[in-house]
Length: 584
Image 1: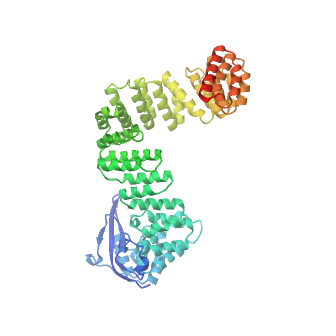
Image 2: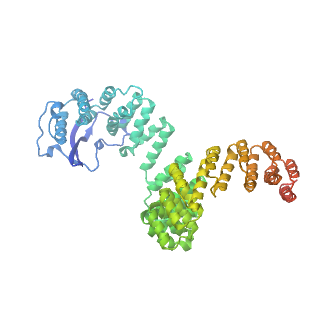
Image 3: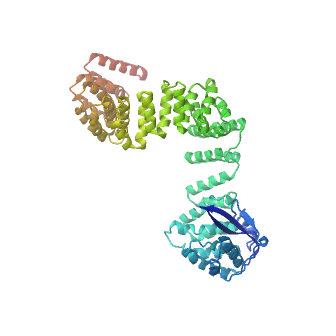
């Protein structure tokens, strides 16, 4: 290959780190002509002068340097001299005078030097000179030197080829990708393809995007995202509406496009939302994307976004309001509340509660102080919302806040769940140490609910240590209701430990109903063995309605087994109503 390399310049990037200056030197071709026929490379839209272009760099022509370059015979001499800049300058001049074969020998020598001393960083100067002379031979040298033909290469070895691929692709993307395809297994091909997709230099490369079809669906999706990312948001949005994609993937692509939308015009945002509403997207997907539009809109003009909510007759307004208030509160919580007050007549007083609760997400102390200062501590709905957001951020502090306010037990349960999710051990310690009975009951309820979700038997054993607590019976019901769904026979057997008759009146009918839906025969056999006829009658009453929809004749038989006349009469009324509405 005999290319004509006309000019070079040096890119100097000087940075400071811990008080020291480091100089980074890079060779960048300004005008490049290779022996590649442009007609055969028409898909390559990237100019060669982009190679190694660094943001915020200073380009200095060697011809304009005040310091005359020193003459060196080899790179070993160069690494012995002063600064990185001086080394780079000398390396540039030395490489400029060499032909490809000589450069190849020196590149291999530099690899060894850099391995011995990581401070030496000159191989890339030689590499870029070689790429301009013969990119294919340069790639082959790297491929051989780093043994990239081996299987199961580590990530560091695989990444060694990325610089070559990047710079070659800037010159000739077609042949660069062809080399990758011919020499690497599909997994590594996808790795390199994905690497180029992420580089802004290739965002407009139609040839790169056209190669995506030979890879996995995941890589194809990445290529589509990159292609859409290179378009103007309006055009990308229209393209997405016309594509058939998996809902999850399409949602994230839409969201990415919406985030790039820079319009501050009310009409444009409304037009965007109307396009979503009239599209063939699923209802849930439409609502989520409309919400994303409101989030973007709120970032530039929240008042305009709030004004437009009443014009969108699709989805839940409360969802959109929450998103807008969240964007406002993120910047200034108190201002978000003031804005909410101005819209309370149009959108309802709940918008004020939403603004305060979203404020608590970012600054819970300020939000709770606002609640106390403005006499809002009796607003249970507001306290519950704030408990959710405050609890997620700092559950222990939130519990103390709720305790100081003497908040309702539901607020404590809400915060307790957050503490359990963040640290089960801390929740256990808090339960055992707290003296406020309301707080203790809430924590006990929340903990047993969490434990019984996974193993009701273990939750039952754990709960028994708190049998003296006032909240024990309510917590016990929670365990048994979960238990009957997980293991009915085991749960029924454990009922023998419950001696409180009132508690059994609550437990057995509900448990019977849950079990009957899974195994009617086993449930009926269990009920017929019960000695307490009053509880048994209540349980039969619960299962009659379910039996009616499956076998009306059997439902009549069950009703005949009820001893209590009042309960039997209720069951017969249900039977008559069912026959009237569904036919005899």
